Length: 335
Ligand code: ZN
Image 1 (cartoon, rainbow, N blue to C red):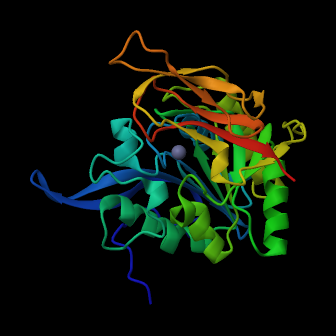
Image 2 (cartoon, rainbow, N blue to C red; image 1 turned 45 degrees about the vertical axis):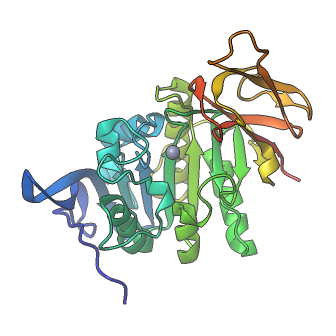
């Protein structure tokens, strides 16, 4: 038997109606020996229908999803729900409070520590709570991200391909319902691999729709709209929350990231000057940008080229760059 979570809550996920409160992440510090950190949670339950679990704030500096879920949590009445909706708009709350990707408590990146540990660091304890308490209740999980401080993303949804054909078809259907302009399939190459929420959820057979909605640690209105409409369409599709006001989305463009060749990395320190915008279609050998040396102002900048043809999915947002930083990520149309 797995070790029980140390996180507790006055919220009961079995109680009918709308509850707003927090999960309580235990801490024991110099100034708070028996304390807890609040992780906001809203639970709406009406009867015995399916359960959707909605996350934002897995990374604290990604805002479109956080605000889209605040709005949803305010608007939905349990009378309109058939089943259960559990909303955690600030899942790694210490990171949200600090405006950072990672938690200031342990430098933990919540989407790199799944399945988590019951007796681990604060970030590992949150991942373990998701894996051991929330995923077993869920028929659908949505996890809303954007590029954060270091990346700008083309607004898109993503799924982790499943080896199980039926599960895979279900994910393809759900991501189409979400209706982002672009939907891409990735097993986390270049990112988190098997340490992510979708990897943990796959082991339990729970479908996860992730979204990347903008970036640069700011708020893009279009990304917030995509998140809001996509979540509502999914809830409607699952029969959990009826909303007839939503338009049918335009068909999504399915893409994939087949290899590491689809990333451009800095091989020097310098100032990064991108030559293309996210969303652009590029060809192999095309100029991607420049790296200017801060030490040698009269030296020509390093010219960076795209190794393959594709669409620019994301680019590095800060200009100051270190060797090893990811400058661009590409996608190609799904084959
Ligand atoms: Zn993120």
